[in-house]
Length: 306
Length: 306
Image (cartoon, rainbow over all chains, first blue to last red):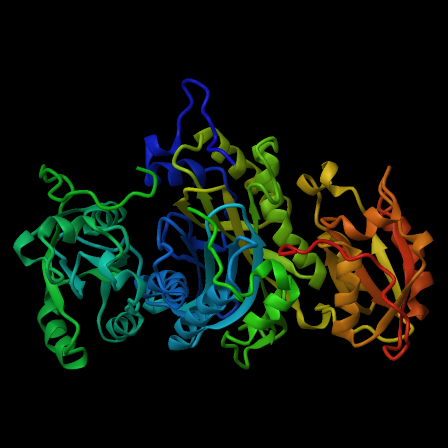
C-alpha cells in the first residue's frame, strides 16, 4: 500500500510533531470523573475499586524499522516491547499487574521469530511479576509491530506525576544518558525497583521516565509543573563514549528524572548509594520560577513525527 | 522492509494458522493465581480489588490492508477499532470502562485522516461510556494500524465464558450472519446492551461474539465446553443477499452466539422480541455429547494466518 498522498494544503503529521498531535487528538476523546490523569504519553491514573489505590494503565508499541530492525535478536525485541510500558510504571511509582499483547506480523514470518519475541515478552513480564492475560494477533502486509498494554496499581499516597515540581526543587537523573541505540534500548531494566524505593522513603515532587531524551522530556516535566529549569550541563552523567549533545537528544534512556526538595537531597543521595551502589544518581540542576527569561538550554530529543 | 525470508525447513505462520499459533505462544507467557481466564482471543478475566466484581481486559487491533483500506472513511475506521474490543465485552457480559489507544501511522499521513479516526474512536467510546485515558503514537514505514485496549468489569455472578455449555443446551445467534464486508464491519454496534439484558434475566451457559465466522467460532465454543454441536443450516439467519456458506465463513459478524438450557428458551424468545423487536434472535441448533461421531458440519471461517 502506498503512503497516503496529501491534497495540496493538507497538513501532514511530520509537519506538526508528536506533542501538538497528541494535544489536537485528546480533545476528540471522551473522559469522565473516574479519570484522575489521562492521555498525553504518560501512564493514565484512574479510580480503583480499592479506595487506597489507583489503577495505572499504559499502552506502548514497538515497530519494525523504527524501534528495532531485522538484525535485532527476537527475544530482545519482545523484552523491549514489554519494558517500554513498564518504564512508565516506574515513572509514576506504580506496580504492573496484567499485560495484553497485540502482535501484528506478516503471514510469511517465521514461527521461530515470533516464539523468540514471546520468550522475550515472557522473560520481561516475569522480571516484574506481570501476568500476560491476553494476546491478539493480526497479519499485515507491512512491517511487524508489537503493542503492549499493562494494567497495574499504585497507592494513592505514593503516586507521583510530572506536575508537582516547585521552584527550588533539585533535579536528579538515574543512570547515564545517551548512546542507547548501541544496545541498551533492547536490554534496559525499567527503574521500577528504584522508583518504589524512592516513594517509600521520600516525598518525590515530580517524576517521569526519560524516553525521548532529556532535551525533550525535561521541558515536558517543567511545563506540567508550570516552572522553568536550569541545568549544569557538565554534570549530566554520560554513557561511555557519548558527548553532552547525545546525552540530551538520543532518547530511549529509560532512566528516571525527578524533582525533590533540597531539604531531602543530601539524605537521599547518602541512602541511595547504600541501596543501589551500582546505579548512578546525579543532581543535574534545579527547577526555577517560570517567569525567568532564560532561553531553552537543551537540544531537543526524539520526536516520532519530525 | 522486505518480508522475512525463511531458511529452508523453517515454519511460517501461514502454515499453522491462528489457533495453533496462540496455543504455542501462550505457554511462553507467565500467568498467576489472579488470572481467572487468560489468553486465547477472548477477553481476559482477572481478580478485581472489588470482590463482587471481576476485571475484564481486552486488546484488539485494525490494520490497513487487512481490516480496512484507503477507501474506508476515517471515522468508520476509528469506530471499528474501538468496537472490535467492545464486542468482546458483550461476549462475557461485561461493561467497558477505560480505553487505551496505540496509533501507528506514517509521517506523511494527513492530519485530517488521523483526526477522523479519533472522531470515530471517540464516538464509539461515548456510545458505551468508555473514557479514553491514554494514547501512544508511533511512526511506521508501513501501513497504518490502530490497537485499542479496554479495561472494564463484570459482576462475578454475571460473567459468561465459552466453557459452560452442556449437551442439550439450545444454541442461539443474534442478528443476521454473512456479508459484513459490504459495510456492517465498519458500522456495527456491539451487542453489549443485549448481552447485559440476557444475564440480568437468564442463566446463559456459554457465550461468545462471532468475529471469525460461525464455522470457526462455534467449534471453539464447543471445544471450550467439551461438547459437540448440531446445526440446522436452514435456520441460520442470513444477511440480505448472502448464502449459507457466506453466513458461516465470512466472519466479522460481531453477533452473539450463546447456549442456554431448553427450559429457558421459550420464555427467552418471548421476552427478547418485546425488548429488542428489531434484533432477530434465532435458535440455530443444540449442543450434543462430544462422543457423537458426527463430522464437522460447517465451512471454516476466517483465519488471520491462513
